[in-house]
Image (tube, rainbow, N blue to C red; front, side, top):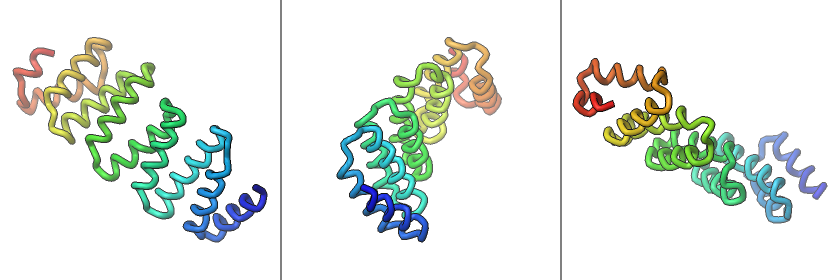
Length: 165
């Protein structure tokens, strides 16, 4: 394993990214420790995104991390970044739904982010309105939601649906 670590450091130092990816993959195939596997996968995903511009492979790598640890916030965040850059809003909404289940402590902010994706990217106005209503039921003073709803009302956007909130 020391030889692999030395090669990894060398390839990283000289910027031989494809060779570094090969070494990381070799190291992944040899590890039996789940925490080390996750750490290597994160390094692999970062390399794929930042140096090799291979988003599809990075996405698969983050998905693999979630197979190992289905509540890994860092992997979810990595997927969100990929989906935002690639403008894959359906997958972004799916990840936000997952976050809602996994991160109840941040549910209002995640619901708001999901409502914005539903409204502005997927044109699912009714779903967004339902989410805004849920947010205000939990926190009647949620500033971002109130501000968004005020803007929509002032623009005259489907006032009859917003009035129910």
